Structure formats: C-alpha cells, structure tokens
Image (cartoon, rainbow, N blue to C red; front, side):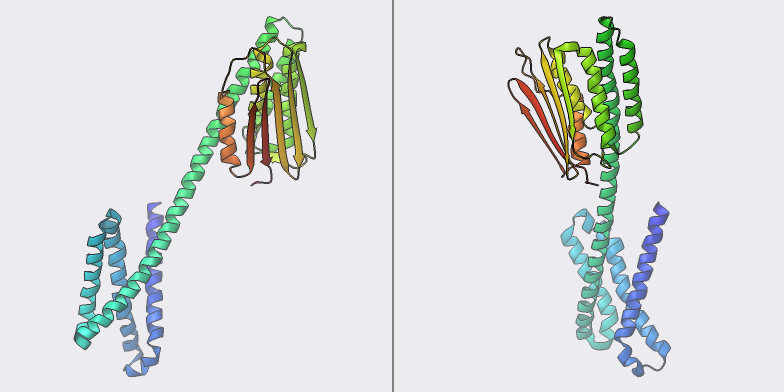
Length: 331
C-alpha cells in the first residue's frame, strides 16, 4: 500500500513537471527566434520549470506537512514568503535587479498558489475517499453485528414457545418443532444475504404467527393480511420480525386475558406500509418496550434506509401500534 502510494505521488509530480515545462515552452514560443538554437530555448524553458517546481515541492513536501499542518500559520507564511523571495533573488537580480526580483516574486507567488490549490483539492478528495471507505467498512461491520444478534434473539423466543407447549404436553409439539426448524433454516440462509424477496420475508412472518397461534391456543386472535403486488421487491432480511415478536411478548404472552394481534402489509408504488397492532392487558405495567430486538431493528433501519423509511409508534392505553413505511426502491 505504501509502495503504491509512493509510486502514485512520483507519477503525479513527474506529470506536473512535464506539464509546467510544456506550458513554459508554449508561453515563450513567440520568442524562440531570439535564441541561437532550439536547444538553448528548451534549456530556458527547462530552467523556469525547475525553479517553479522546486518552490512548489519545497512547499508541498516540507512547509505544508511540517509547519502548516502543525497549525503554525504565521511561521508557515513567513517561511513561504522567504523561500519565494530567495528563489526570486537568485533568478531575477542578475538581469533586472530589484525590478526583476519583484516580477519573479509575484510570478512564483501565483504559480505556488495554483499548486497549493491543486494540492489541497487532491488531498481533500483523497481524505474524503478514505472517510467514505471507513464509513462503509464500519457500516458493514455494524450491520453484520446486528444481524448476528437477531439470530439468537429469535431462537430464544421460539424455544420459549416450544417449552410452553411441552409443559402443556400438547400433541402439536412435534409439529411445532418442525415448523421452528423451517423458520431457522430460512433465517440462517437469509442471514448470508443483504436482501431477500419481500414475499419470502412475509411468508416467514406468517409461519411464525402460525407457530405462536398454536402455542397461545384460543386466548389470542391473530390476523395477518397482505395487500398489493410483492413480486420482485426485496428487503433486508429479518427486519420486520422483531416488531412481531414484541407484539406477542408484550401482548398475548403477558396476560391470560383474551388478546388480539393484527398484522397488515400494504404494498403500493414499491413502498411497503407495515402495521402491527396488539392489545394490551388491563393491568399492564407501564413499559418503554426497548428490548434488544426492537433496538436492533431501529438501528438497522437507520443504517439501511436512512432517508427512505418512517417509523411511528402509537402507545395507547389499550393497544400498541407500530406504523412502518419503507421505500423498497432505495438502493
């Protein structure tokens, strides 16, 4: 990486030197007849190019990194002016005295300023690229971490459901175990992907609700509906299930009263409107409902759909409703 960076720096500066040389030769082309030979004209242009680039290189490789970047602004300005004045004196005093020095001084000041502009533009572009690469890497690492957290969280809740059925010695326990294995297979496969088909994700939620409906028996009424065309649309995996898990946990699972869970998915113009409502028990204890799964999904939404999702939560006295809207056309 260091060798590549050094090679690029050398190539850029050699290219800059050649460009300055060409510009100097072109600017003095009308005066070529004043020189004895074309070689002497070329040497004249080469001399100017060396002087210009020498000042630029001193500024770029010495003054900026060792003085300006250390926030010694006054010292930097003084040293830069002195270096330009020194080179101007060496070049211009023999020909026209102080007039030649002043002409050469302002000429070098202009060329050095132009070189600084190019230098800072290139450095800012490089730093911006590095920041973007770091942000992308950090984002990928955080998303992977959040996805890994979802897996055990979902498994823990599902095993609780099976444990409850086994305590009841339910005849449906073996069937529920098979359903759970199918759910886990989908989860493990989807965890390796950035996106999955929305149709598959909604089917996963439906199967999970069927599993919970068996466990909760007749004391919970669950309704699930899909409206709109889901074909071709994709969504981040395991993004919606935490809301469903929370509805079960804080609704039907927390009481022996009759309860309801209503889940609806409306797809219109590639926008998913997902709504889930669960009833709350009469003697419920006030809770902020900030479980691990819900915190994770809120964080994932901010990372994956930063400007194309809207999440609203209505925590009423007798019901808890989540409204989620996502533009699935977002890259």
